[in-house]
Image (cartoon, rainbow, N blue to C red; front, top):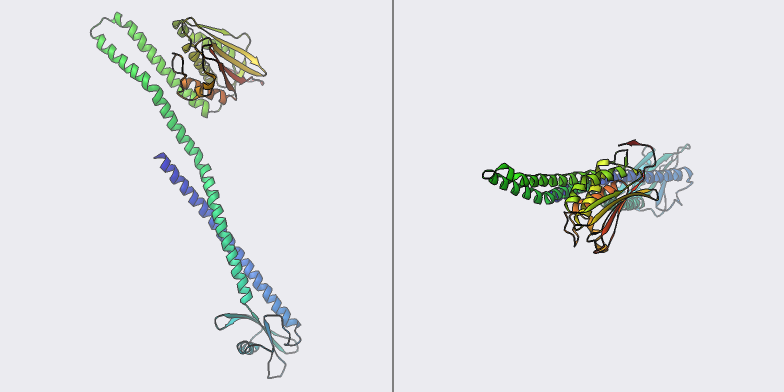
Length: 403
């Protein structure tokens, strides 16, 4: 449905743009034709006026022209030798007219332009010129303008198509992002909601037959399920914000954020018998969104702890590297195949090893946050030798409000 609407909007945009450009081309072409044809007609008039002013007899007119003269007091009219009878009749008819010019024709296929003049000595002069060459020039001009109009219209269609694609592209992107977000939410929330619903049903049944103290463990599991569900929702919201909202102009101590993340994840790591430690001695200021950065580091630690067997270690190290702040989350767990490194940042991607919680959306979130903060994520590791994810961000270089 959305695709059909976008196609209709694109076609409508193409038609409107091409129509507007075509109308402009038509008006410009018509104006050029009128101006050029008028200029050609005035040039012919100027030539005929010059011929009448300079002619001394009727014997040698310019090609395509015929001259007639009537001397003062004479009843006869002199006409250029060789003129056809039809042209002679036109000249005889024109000799008695008032000075000026007019167009006429002989039959249906020989248009003429006639100019009449009277000289100071009382003589009358008439010149007739064949209009066929001028008409042919005007037809050629019209044809050339028509070809130019069609070529311009074709170019307008191409340009309109490109402009329509560019204009509709943001809308298509927005719709695609909307569909992807809905798909992400549906995919990520389906399992937690199912588990939560099932556990709530079991508790409701057992509450009728068991004493409350025997339900404490199951209630704790229910709380854990709701917390996991909240984490999924937070991942989705932070991911969307990292992609589409501008970063706040604040300074964030990434070392402090890392210590907070390690402290909050300590209980989870302890429950999996994984040692979680941090090495962050000096402050590491960066500019960006504290909430997004905290969620990204949480996703990295969550991923590492989830892929380390009992008795393993996860170390978070914060230091500076060539003007950048680096947060490395390294583990000695199952490791990863270097060939899978890039694919792991796709949404819902899963590695071929590890028994931890989901990380497809979590690592995609880290990638989005890094990109939004003009940084990057590096991955190293090998199967059975652990893995290290390093978040690299530009260090803060100008004073800013610290949060």
